[in-house]
Amino acid sequence: MSTAPRTATTTTFLSEGDTIDAWHFAAADDRLGNPVVVMAHGLAGTKDSGLASFGESLAAAGAHVLAFDYRGFGASGGSPRQTVSMAGQLADYRAAVDAARKLPGVDPARVVLWGVSLAGGHVMAAASGRDDIAGVISLTPLVDGPAAGRLALRHHSKASIARSTALGVRSKVGRTRMMPVAARPGELGALTISGAYEDYLSIAGPTWVNEVDAAVGLELGGHRPGKLAKGITAPMLVQIADFDRSAPPQAAAKAAFAAKALVRHYPCDHFDVYAGKRWHDAVVAHQVSFLERLFLA
Image (cartoon, rainbow, N blue to C red; front, side):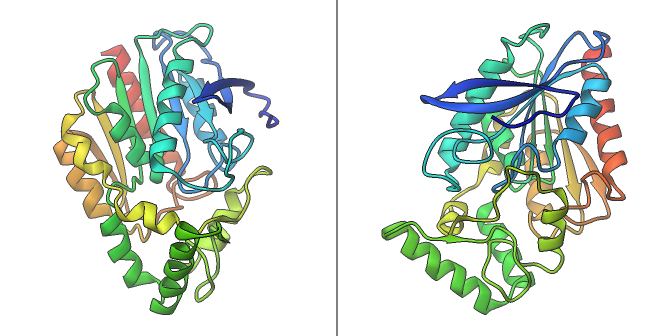
């Protein structure tokens, strides 16, 4: 288990037989009617890597929050470790929704899905075709793997991409091979844009490990949750970093349009939405405003 912040308590639930470690930030009051926000991180992220500030802010505004680690990451169980499975993470998210409904004090009819980066796409897939979701918050979402690949070609060296792709193929067809999640430009890694290494390490918590199965690029190649956005009927907030070098903002805008979502734009890059960065307060304020519109209107 992970050590929860003083503002949260640790809880667990099962996903396909594996134990998922989660934090429950209890609502400060019941003015919103006790909704619960189910919160997950992006690529190889852990809940202790930047999610607490979001969970604490939404709890202070009157929402319960359940933030969790995917199987194989952070404090959760499951193997293989540090391997991204889109289908597996979506299954974990759906299990988290079921667990969130059972938390003490929660109104099970008021579930809000919250995801950042890769999870920003997962929440679209998880909400699509369902009528039991009250709202969706998608922050700097990665919704189109092929578009992300094209964006990477603009910001990463071709040599670096070629090395990571070759390693990913070997990992997929043979023995699992790891590479850093974040590395400096020119080095081997999943995120090697200038500043990404420093930005990721600035939010990294004690359970975060700077490695990921190199096959993650192949997983992303066919990952297109934005295609499911048209099936979302719940009110949705999509928060786009206009200068995002990791999650294509144009693809996020297209998915938001399909979902008839409320869209907020920020003149920043992918990591500039976390605590300590210039746009964090605005991002949180818009999330709180969205919840108030949902439950106080």
